[in-house]
Length: 212
Image 1: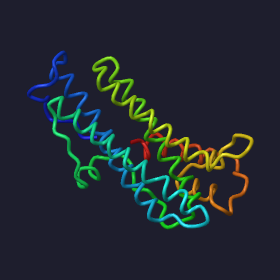
Image 2 (image 1 turned 90 degrees about the horizontal axis):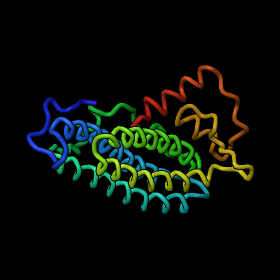
Image 3 (image 1 turned 180 degrees about the vertical axis):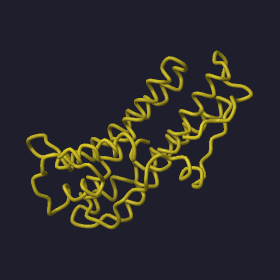
């Protein structure tokens, strides 16, 4: 993350410019994560295949629209706080802390396995951001909580395709997007137990590579 070099010249009433700057930095990374998620959802929408194609293809478009609206609300809050929302592709790539989505053309359910990990990383970081905002700016906290309501619902929609009758996810032991796609795909087998290396990889995905 690249924080602002200096506090904004003004911010909303009730916050110091230093506090406003902290919220701007926090929201800037949320803006990047939401813009990236919208692009990822469209990428999946275009690249799903197999018998579940139409169901997944049509499920993702409303999610894309909603995520774009979330990005818009985050950007407008940055402006209200006296900051400059930066939404160009170059800034996103330069400042993000994760890699591109790693699955290309693939079975629809395989994509949903990978997308589940994407949502996990975004939701975890949105929750952390909301917790940080709580003691400084309840308006920003409320905005992030509103995002979380929809993001967690969208992940539920995704997980409904990955859950068996016993309530277990086919991707439970996956440590990367590609592993999740393989576990969820049509040729999936019972997931292997995690090794120490897989646990480290999983931590990287949710807390680092997919920390959005």
